[in-house]
Length: 467
Image 1 (cartoon, helix red, strand yellow):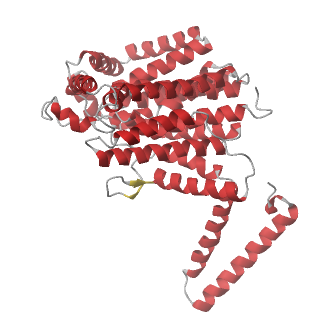
Image 2: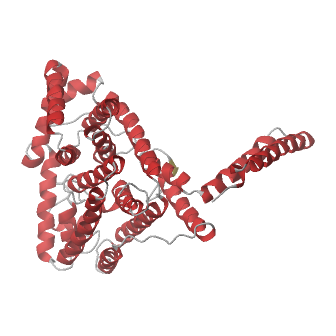
Image 3: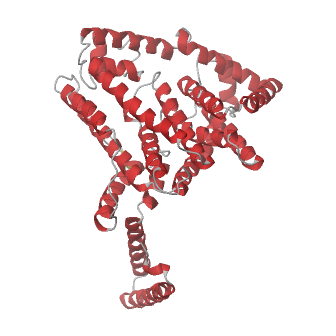
């Protein structure tokens, strides 16, 4: 669409119109006698201009929305209430409205669908039906609403992301924000003398000062590093220039340090699998081996890093043992309760969001220290939606993975391949992470990753996309 201000004559009209606006505004300010009139009127026109630009190009709003996912609960429009209204939620609702108006007024292209509508419809229908017998209907309705809005977000992403530079803009924005957050987290959790001494003293059995800059939960905060790590590692392992590889490696090390500062064992395991996937795909075993050896030498040479690594290693091992800290023991308790729920109602489950209520039938909240949320997406679905729900979930994941794998096969261009490998490894990291933690079905960045995967599929279908 050619805009008026893209033409030389249009630029003259824009400059002339702005000049007349400024003159008339200040004359009005003089006549009314209030100094606040000028900035108020100018802000209205600037906001109107930006709003029109966003309506013409909704991508201008989509990219900031991705950045807002990293801000978590820092910027809350309405902090009180059951669900605090955050900047991300405001931008998502605004983007849905803008996207609808954009297609209604400007866009003549066909609205893209995902191709997995049947799987989504079946699992949403089962969730809705299970609310009838769920012991926690209010929470079930609230979480179902969140899932529906996140699915709508996926459709918005798919229909707005149509150029590779937009993918890179989102990836670079998220990487930049992750570097800032990771640096702050490292400074707060690893470089603080008191925190470091206390963590060395406990040797991984107890953690003091876990990094969580924008999100209260350090484990969820750690998931923010998945996509940036996958993106920079893909650049490092791909056949690019030595300068780009060196820069990508430096950024990756900062991101890994930020990830380490969260002390999230679930995220560590997920990130390790993420990195192994990329190394295997790019077949850069020698390069990755040399890099790992260099990191090990640095750790062994610095006593503080050596002691810190030993504590982290001990904490990582205990995620499977469940003997050193309460969180590991509670995870095992939650898993046992989930199996009881499944065998008691194996076909349809106990109802969506029924796990927290039914948990007390098997264990007391005193034993679990008040923790009643499931910490594994598989046994959560088995317990709440039964065998039928688990089967539908598997069908949905298989369909998504087929698209992600197809994107890699069809990406003959190096830039498209970096995007495709980063996305499939990020998706895998999320799924592994949520085998040790709860809330996977409502994770914003997981659904955003799915949206990016399908957006790339439609982008690769376009002529001249590098396939």
